Length: 274
Length: 267
Image (cartoon, rainbow over the protein chains, first blue to last red):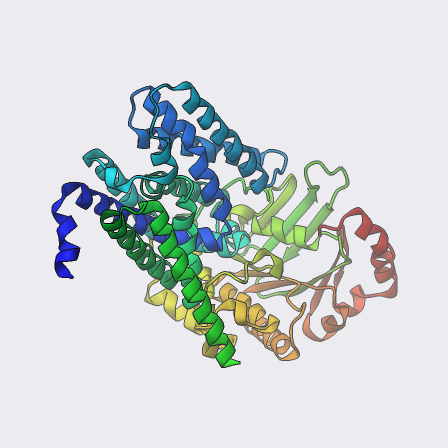
């Protein structure tokens, strides 16, 4: 058993991927609580799709993929913010427009760029193809995201719970929301490397959805989300190594199984209590 | 929601009350929502002294909530002047606190009673500071006053309407403001909570702090308030409950209520 666990660890590509995965899982886990409880699930998905043109353009100009993706994500956040503040557009309308438009642009660009063969890796992730530079970038981004959530936890909490109170104490909910979107966008980018743009949403939403069924306070939800996503990433990794299963899909499946188990557990518990 | 002209957060923007100034002074205040021609407030003038307990009454659409938002600095003043203990309204985050109508709060959010009340301390903390012993003590004290210490670790979503309102008042107590604004605090609240709220307001005022309570329940005024402001875009009466709540004033304001509701459902 121990050998089974240790064997892949001697390969540097596996180690790099594993560290990248754990960093991504920690960042997603810590954001997940706020994404679920601020009702921002849709925006995570939208950002994941909106980074596609950034990735393609980056490849065209020979820039690193993740940097292109980061720029595209931040652009989308600004565009959504600008649309939302214009004539009282609802945020989900703005998100819908930007999301579909950017994804379509990405697909068209892929079509035009010859030699762009990595589409499946972008859509479904390729965690075992993480380079040294990728790993450094992923760890830096994850570290910054986690640090920001810890530093601004108080402000995120008060703007989520009661935006009028936040405004009354001199704190702008709009600024905090915007900052949080940037963090989500950055996390989406690094997560897309592991599970791909199609399934990033699972890492941003499912951990906290599962945790919320089991514990009730936000810090606990966030802690449990991190644990759940790290476990899923590790399981996804090993199954990818031993059974040649697609890592992204496996990670999402494991997260979903956790969710179903937690759901059944809380259902049974509430039936027993009543 | 409109952004306040001056967003300032934390200790650096704490302005202590100026000596011998009214708790609240409003001069020639006019207000209309952008894009809406009809005005919500017209030529509002009032002065409230420290330690005063004042009721704010008026029909729906009279501008009660808007007036509170302006005092709190949530809306930008268009013309006229509001000062709180000698400072401009929006520069007075530490002096003013409001118990909002329940709709502005996400009650399903996974926070406990204690965490919500702790939010009342954030105004004193500012960026990068976590609540310390002083803040914890203030929160304990506020919970004790509102008799909710036993539910400190409950999630706010599990509370009754009365308990939620107690939590909101406790948060305001933890804020330790000198001017408290309570926007329709008696809606959907049980009798025991109502009594406790009035008792607490009494106590706050005896400490020299001022309280402004908006309500459409005219019945409670004669018992609990020494001063009543009757708002219908402007103050149509100001004085004791007996003097303000005359049949003439009530007819003048409430006679148009149906019309007002159609015109302006927001306030």
